[in-house]
Image (cartoon, rainbow over all chains, first blue to last red; front, side):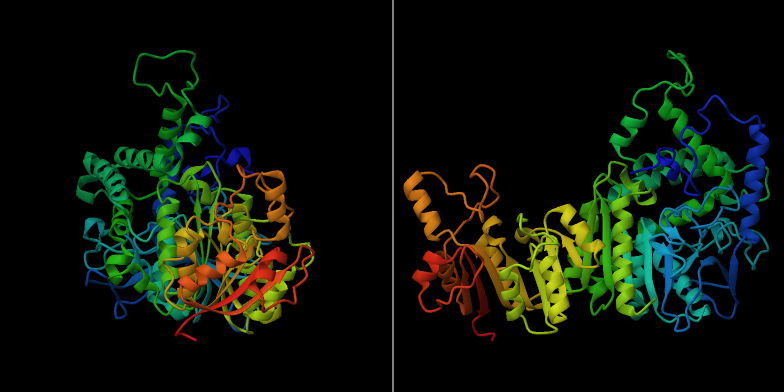
Length: 421
Length: 213
């Protein structure tokens, strides 16, 4: 069901990597420090010069944020795949997760790895770019070309840092809607996303009811629970406890809070995997040694793996973006926004397909079923599929035949109804 | 809940055909315990209904959604309460009520969320079942109810008369009741509940909540 080499690639959302990368004896002979700096430099360049299409909304067309503040000018970086048909009815918006980006189905400009959802998106794939016009934008607050804390603040000429306004999932969605306006698309054939991407899908369906024909919220939740917030807070505190964070003003200095961000990533990564997946893959196995070193080296395979996940992540991701985006997720609560979760969907004509995974304990089936219950409560057209998987939350990023068949079947039937060739 | 004869390549079941006759074109339909979606597909094809399903078994749900049907994984006992009143024109429970934990609550919910409810069930009053119990002294096993008592999910088997009693208790109106013999043919008897109960192997009831019709 899963290509062996891809088991844990999603630990690095930028693309597949062979498992045990850096664990194998045949490691390429590159000075790791040099490699790290070049990746980090490449990542930094993406903030201001992304390898993407961009749309810049000028200062006189600011985005009103949920906090009441305005942000403008602002930039949204996006990628598109396939061709928009003449009646503009075949557009699919894909919403990325916390550490994802717009490079859903192309080689990543920083890491050189494949697109993060190439299992699902591409020619002849379930989200078929021969048939659909697929759009994916970097979220507001991100660090791959859309305006975020690493972007230059026009008021000061310096990167925003913590002067960047706190944003919400709703703000991300409003910014996406402006980008969709810019593309001249009225109604999206589908809005699809997993994890935080799924939250954006739900927010789209609540705020832009007539603009979403079908929706696939995947491995997600209608609100962040105390446990979700708790894990995020651990991550944020790890970043902020790193002296190199410098109150968020580390841009242009020689230091970045890499150690803090790596710890944040390590903790978060555990939540993306199931206990069984960890146990099966690593168990108590030792890394490149036969016995304990009686030191704090990465004796165990799992330690080595997490350290690797942490260190590759900090090369490509901005620590302040991580703070802002996790905050936005913590603030997400559709029930609070609408009084009752079902109210968020009152009058919806969108056709929904909610998907959860059995071993996902970050956004478990229970949370996804709350969405289904609310949709049933307004007699919305909803399918709900729980996919059997022992891979945990990350299952949505992995090749999973039943999941692919679900996406394929749902989109096919809806496309047929909509008359998309 | 899923019966062995529910298979996409099998001939259309007689009770499904009858249900398709009962449903008006273009109606909003909820099929509770929809199995592999055979009835839903028939209704969508023949009657252009806006069809939804609920199914307990994960593989069935996945197969339904992959075929483009709107089906949620769920269970009649737990997931009907969330639907608003009269959300559907027809709420269908096809050969499932006997496997629910609380048939009365399920039927109440069906009558609440549907303007009509269509319920089909295996008739435990059929003469073969009666005689089997009488002669062998053991729980009857028939092609319709093939499992042993200890493996069967059917914890609430009933007869046509039993079901009629429950309909009376819930103050619903029987608009139509059709029994099928063991060859899947409709019995012409409509007047006599006792004869239907004796000769019918399955029954299909079309119900309407009183005061709402």
